[in-house]
Amino acid sequence: MLDDFGTGYSSLNYLKQLPIDIVKIDRSFIQNMTYDQKEQKMAKSLIDLSHILDLKVVAEGIEDERQAELLKIFSCDFGQGYLFGKPMPKEEFLELAKRF
Image (cartoon, rainbow, N blue to C red; front, side, top):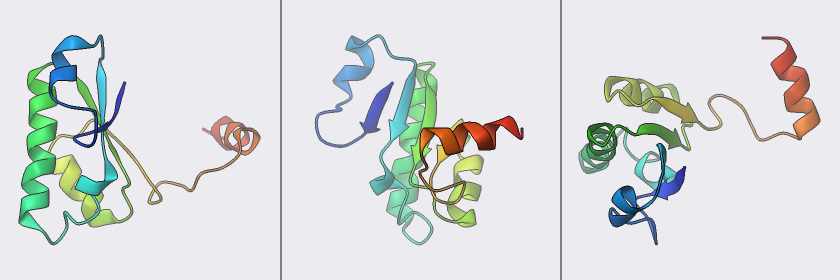
């Protein structure tokens, strides 16, 4: 997995050089997308580019329903963030997972 895609050292060049199958879009592209058209276009472009390269996409930092809705519209594969749950200890997560 290529984490924090679109920021710092995770450049486009890594998409062709590294043996990855999933990219995780950094939360900085998600946090303002509900009211910023440029942020929406960037997030959609990152998702589209990843899909063109047959990569799955995880969006991180999803905090509200509108962000999740937009990411569904953009065909994002997976999401993570406080909307779905807060970080928790491994043991607590395993107990929660047993319920499903």
